[in-house]
Length: 118
Image (cartoon, rainbow, N blue to C red; front, side, top):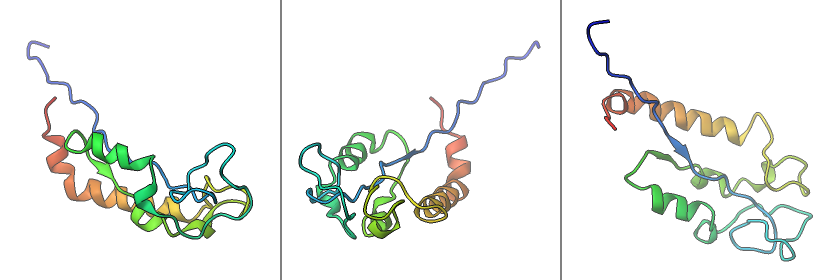
């Protein structure tokens, strides 16, 4: 080719860490020796979720971040093996909602995202 073509970089969109619902910590995260295995908490205090709060703080303005915690924080009863596994989700279920949020974000912002130069 005689003409240089500008290569497009991939579009990066970050999904914050999914909330866990372990008993024994207000944020629901598993802490060895402190978290109780058994029943998953139905709701967690998202302000105490030390996994996704720093993500949102450090990535703000650097890349798009899909926030999933507002509708996942009170979905403790939708984990796999209710009462045993408070990290993984039933499917179809909560992860499908995340996909809808991602699709809607891409659909609404695609033209803007394609124009970003790095």
